[in-house]
Image (spheres, protein in one colour):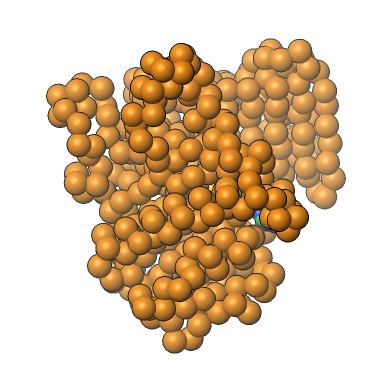
Length: 401
Ligand code: AMP
């Protein structure tokens, strides 16, 4: 069986999966693992393979040691990359700037271009690059492919991509809307024409990726025309720990009047805001428990979250003019029926009607949750970014072999 190894390298972690690109979104991957606490006193490598979970604990000083430990553990448990038919390695790369609209086979030149983009994503791209460098050393004979979180949004028209700030400053510093979660928005949106029975170029749709991070995208004929995340993944919807859209003047106020440093404000808005900032918890399952106990802060956080979500759905309906489908995906979007119901409540006038029974049904697959007479169809489609990356990697590797 031909497999792809998919790597998602963060600053202190590496997520990895061995994926059969022919499988379905809801099938379990061949193997899945995580290297954690890289650079800390003690790190952990976890591997789930063949229904069993294995762990090793040891100091993991850098990504090279981390990936080496992961490969050894895989080898010990019978799924070592050198023992399997791995046809490509797919790397998630957060920022492709305006350089990359498509996945790319990684060459030294491409890697150099990804390095040039570090100023746009100083936290994410260096970690992605470490993962790529280490994996290329360890698997030198397999094609490596970079899949960019931003790539899907290259089609956005300038009116949606540009911010209304000084054009020279914007051009000099690369300030514009890039968008993120592109692999997920593209992946789920590609299923919609078939579910509607309409040609892809005729379909206008809104996709809502609601996980720990959250974003909304307006798509016309398969091309993104607007998205809620911006130059960074901090913008747009209220999220688990991220504020989403706020008045940029708040940053000046916190710095000048509250005496907070830029790093403290960065931490506040990225890690201690959103649902967590208001309720104390960022996980939607915990939030739901608190709401059941009638915790007022949890209610407030939920209401702010829903309000912001409706705001984006409404503005994208206007941007698209006609909407054929609205799709929910990712951890919250796939599982939280109350979020779906409240996000689209009382919109019959706009042709949107949720069927409560269908919406409340527990189901893992792609499904419709709107009434038969709803003009706008509402879907839940499970996302699978790793599978999408695996497919890109294998396809591109085959085309270049
Ligand atoms: P993701 O980033 O896609 O993994 O999504 C993570 C988010 O999905 C977290 O806030 C989880 O609480 C939420 N989530 C996962 N499973 C459920 C569930 N069964 N009900 C509600 N929220 C869930």
